[in-house]
Amino acid sequence: MTTWTFEGLSLPVDKSVRLRFGSGEEDSLPGRFALPGLVDAHCHLTVDADERGPFLAGSTEAEDRLDRLAQAGVSAVRDVGGRREITLRLAREPREDRPIVLAAGRFLAPKGRYFPRMHDPVEPDELLKAVEAELDDGATWVKLVADFPAVGPDGPIRGSAVEPTYELGLVEQVVATAHAKGGRVAAHTNSAVVSDLVRVGVDSIEHGTSITEQDLEILGARGGAWTPTLCASIDTHASETLEQRDRRLTKAKYLTSMLELADQYGVTVLTGSDVVGSVAREIELLSRHGLDVTQAMAAATTKAWDYLGLLDDGNLVTYDEDPRERPGILATPAAVILHGRRIR
Image 1 (cartoon, rainbow, N blue to C red):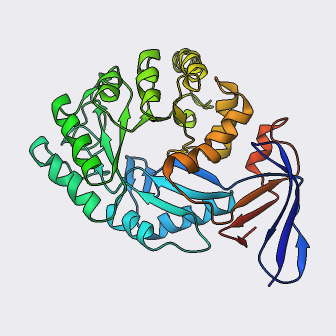
Image 2 (image 1 turned 30 degrees about the vertical axis):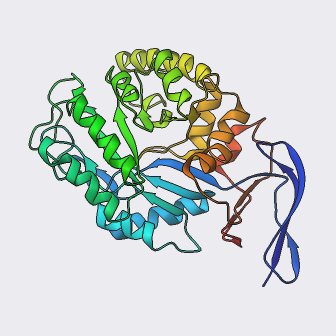
């Protein structure tokens, strides 16, 4: 067995190190700069899309996605909604050649308030039992779709009004139920309901395009997190109209102003690819919109490992160039060590 060694600069701490992985004859890893294993904190392993929109895919697609994430240097994934029988199994049965999986199980949303091919509806009187069922079956998080436009039975969204999916008092009970069973709550939100969600104690805000400074202050005071998923909300798209571009730039400016405040208030910012991006691209976008590049790399590594309660069991991603100077290099690792073994 080869012992792989790295000698160079360890980021985001900016420290010269010499690291060894394995036992046997030594060989040097390529690359002069390194990060701990990346974390994709907002991922959907079983979500795919076709001409009719998003749908839940199967085991093959999920495992292929995990393999691609591993090659990109991702060593841990928080799956925040999908086909529960697959994601919970992947969480229970870790493999040395794939990222660790933390799973939330199913999407929790009532009928007509989420994509119909993405979830089995959970009506308000069933919600608390559904939360308990996910956690009893091995979920460490639950994923609450806390606001969403009305959706027709065949899928298209009816109008643009984003409204709460469940009454606030019920959401508060969801948080209490999850916490009592040792779980945490991640809440999808793109509306002003985010302020109520923060107030009743959800642990992690997902997307959060309407988050406010006061929300950040409250969230940070209790050690909460925000996964802004910039790849999904403000990244450029070749086919966008001028009107869509203007809306995107307005949203980007607002999110930048909030991300500039997040660290000040102690909020843990996390990186998440959703279903359209990558951790590397998310780091790059965060470094352009409110965080400096070191903060953005920490969001994808050390801060994510700490917040999610994960233990680094020997993960490293190396790069030929300094990502602080050229964040785009994060998309092309020179080498990947996953759980102590070289896989790239």
